[in-house]
Image (cartoon, rainbow, N blue to C red; front, side):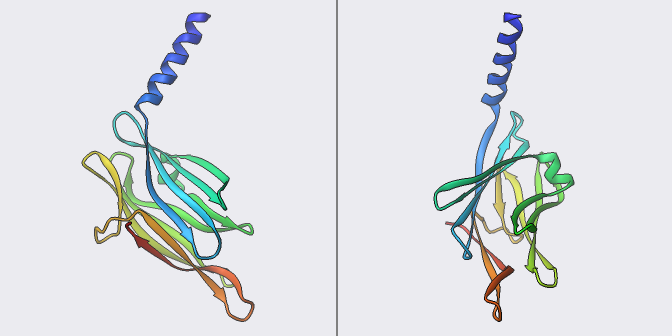
Length: 167
């Protein structure tokens, strides 16, 4: 029994030694102080294994979610939810865990009529590491979600636009 426990512990430590976590980008909004770090874990082959969304507000952790890469590739991931509505859904297009591909941020533009828009990025492997860029190839490590407010009620109803930058 001791050998089995030792073997399992050794295997766990060995596997975790090969996993590498990389911060891909910081997501902020002009609506509030929420910040989300988009991180990925790669396995010993350098393939995408896990997508992590680490959210804080005013310096306090509000969520720390881990999503298997297969789930993101097949079903997508709800990256932001407010008032019971899926504000941002991270989806993939032509994507593999080995080489990456297109990430589509499907976002709620207008919560009153349900209008959604899409913002595309590329997550591709460059020199063995995953890198985020615009479809045109410009590097990205920051995203700003600009709020869409209804003037009459002065309330956030969605995301007006997403701005990508590299700092």
